[in-house]
Length: 419
Image (cartoon, rainbow, N blue to C red; front, side, top):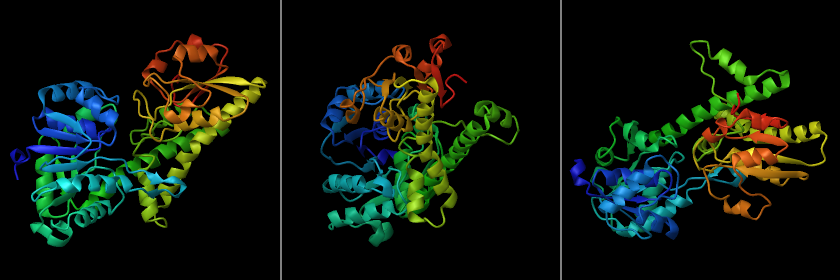
């Protein structure tokens, strides 16, 4: 299979991964049809604009739409390859994976499938999700054969290739990062490699779908465990009256030690979610992974308790708190699973607190906060009005602020903005 055999690609889900991926194919002069359920998203992209913040993405989308290689739609169209990049959250407090978005994507593309197509699941998924996707498609298209029954001779190829990019660096890492490709057969893997070779300069390493699924979960669980160690250190240091930032700097002088930075918790669409997929499948075995999740999920409440203590220490009946940042990490607009956002919401619901939010990467607060008594301010305005300044995300705009603005304020810095 040659890259020239892939003339048209359909990307289902035009979010933080789907849209950059679609733009990357289009920039290589592959015809791309992007599918999304939101009319506003489709209209925005067809105007050559973007609805998310990611460096260089706006340039790529504008160029690709103007050249005619990228177009968004609400309905599927024929293509050689279909990539599914939809959310895979978990269900409430049970932390059971929710595969309904993948199933809906299958229902969307099934009518457009023809013999020779490949469907690649990019969504980070629990082990076995690719097999579920193949079964759903087979039920929807009984006139076509699939690898789970027909093997190498199947009409439709199926593979899993999880994204492995860092928000803020997506456009570069899509090209240079190695890809793990789990085809259900050798021919499935061969076709999937040909698809990604349009723009991937890193290695395309072939394995089984289950191993590819577990590889992505393992990567993020490893990071979650390391963050949990740092967050637990911050709790210990607070109790022992030790500066955790200084401690970590000193410990990291050891040539084989590299402790991460603590923060208000863990957020995003991957690290805060993916480890639960392992725990849900193997609850008895995943002891360290489960403990790390509990440490990181518990950190926001610790931050809230520190704010309450600060109010009491000031001897005030009420206090104004400036929450600096609600994104899940610095210098992006992504609020998914954000511990900073969760902290702000809980503080808003706390009696005797007036909450001000500063988040330079968004123009408006999410819809579920619009009804609350809170509004966006510039960082300078928020600090000026505040009794307590709560640093939640180390955005570059916050790091550039003069420390003189903090005079007379109680400062709770959870992420080393003013280390």
